[in-house]
Image 1 (cartoon, rainbow, N blue to C red):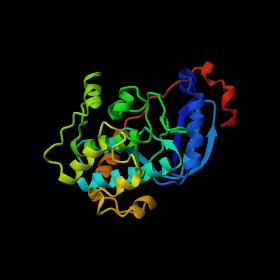
Image 2: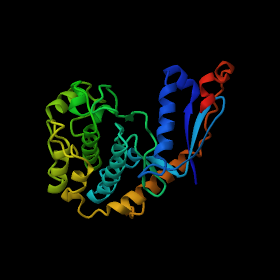
Image 3: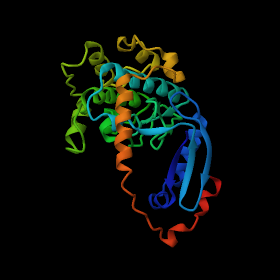
Image 4: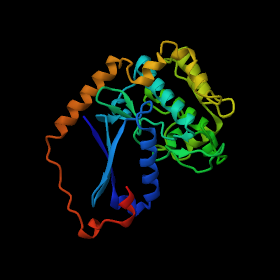
Length: 287
C-alpha cells in the first residue's frame, strides 16, 4: 500500500510557504529510502493540491497511540529508531527539529516513518539562529536565542523519551502556560520520576543537559547508541526496518485503526471550492 502526502495550494499561498514546500519535497527525494524515511515514488499536482506519493502505508502519528505511557521496551524501540534517523540526517548535514510525537509518523506495522520536514534545515555552518520547531521540545539554546546546531535534536529526543514513558512533558507544556516551561527549560529544572529505570533516567538526564557542548550526542550519534539503556538494541535491524515491533505497539495501532474505522462510518462533509481558489499559481509548474 502507498501513502499520499498533500499540500493544500491555497494554504501554501496564504502562508507564503512556496519555498518551504519545495525544499521539503527536495529533501524527501534526497533522503528517499534512508533510515526511517520512506521511498518517494513520484510527485504530482492539480489545481488544489501538491502531492508526494510514498512507498509506505502511513497509519497515524506517534502521539495517536500515546493515550497512556509506553513500557520502556516499546519506548526504547522508537527512541532507537529516532537515533538511527538522526544519525543519517546529521551525516547529511540536516538539522531536523521535528522530533516530536505529533510529527513522527507510524506505518500500519508500527515502524517509525519520517515524512514531515517542515522544520528541517541544511546546516551549512555550525549554528543557525532561526527560532523554529515544536515549542515543548525546544532546547535552552533556542529558548535563549543563542543559536543552535545538531545537539538541539538530541535534546528533543530526551523530551520524547520522557513523554513516551510519562505521558507528560519534562518541563511542562506551553499549552498550559506559555512562559513557565521556557523558564524551566532555560534552567534545566528536571525531575526524573521514580518509576523510571536507573538507565533511562540517566539517559534522559544526559540528553537534557543545558550546556549543549556536554550534552549526550554532542560528539555524534555513537555516544547515544552506546548508552546502557540501548544495550539490547540491534542497530542494524533498526536501520533496516527489520527489528520486531513490540506487541504493545501492534495492539495500540490495531485499536487506533478500529476506532478510526468506526469514525469513518459518519459521512464526511463536502467542501465547496471557491472558483477563485481553483486558479493554478505559476509557481507550481516546477513541482
